[in-house]
Length: 414
Image (cartoon, rainbow, N blue to C red; front, side, top):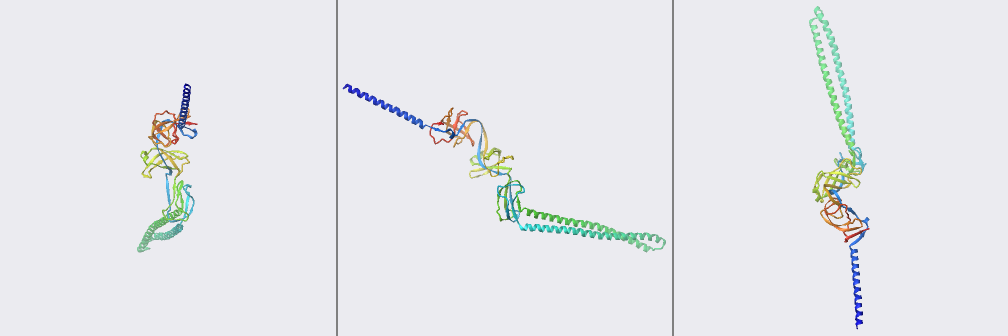
């Protein structure tokens, strides 16, 4: 009986050892599973990694918009006309004398021809007037010359009769008649000479009046020619044809829009910013304009007081020496610098992170092989960076990729 009891005890001990071993193995398996569950492996090239930096950081408001011409010129039709030819299309670079559209108006051509004929007639009348004046002056001069000849003869006769009267050969009556005739001739010469002077002035004034008529007609002809020349619609200054508002064969009324010309060298930026951030913007603030090909520095010059679709339009003045790549109607991004934070810690802004918030990021170890989760608090942000308010060492590396789908505490970087 004693021997039988001893065998049962050994079997019981062996069974307990087996169960204990199984429990240990299960615990190990669970530990391995949990460890595996709390970590993953990711390729380094698939991750965005940024380090904690320290220094000055500009706080900005982001905007978007386009470059527009600072100088715009709207070209309209001066008279009623028909579009005969479209020479240039929108987007064409133009100079001052570039012809954009050719118009036609037969009435203007007829007006020019009539003005030319009228001018030719007035010039012919002037020549005829000068000829008539010359003839009239010659006639009057001939009359005066004849009177002067008769006056000299009467004078000689009087002088001759004077000695004869003293000798009694010529009567006093005859002598007095000779004296009277001499005085009459002298008076007539004086009157005709004065008349000749007045006639010269009259002729000169008549010529001046005719010349004034010619001058007026030249002005009317110039206006008619200018109106006819304006049918060749020109740009007026160097720039780009931004809009063409006519079609071939279209009839235009006076004052109707033909084209819009914008400058290419002098530009401004029109950007839109969110309504809730517009209150931070002030005149004179510096702006960085990104054209995708170059960065331009500008200054806030105007803030539109009207809200449109939850945005506010801001005008940015730009320097005259713009990059060659800067073109009117070009889409741009902008950063308006509100203020600069002095000597702070910051990092490239992780995905979906807002200012004054806290999230968990994965911090890399010194060997950059393992990243463990760490909570970080953030302050103010810019378009690219965000202030770090947590206690953290400069140069520490964090993964800023969006890893919210991974619920692990550790990442193995391979």
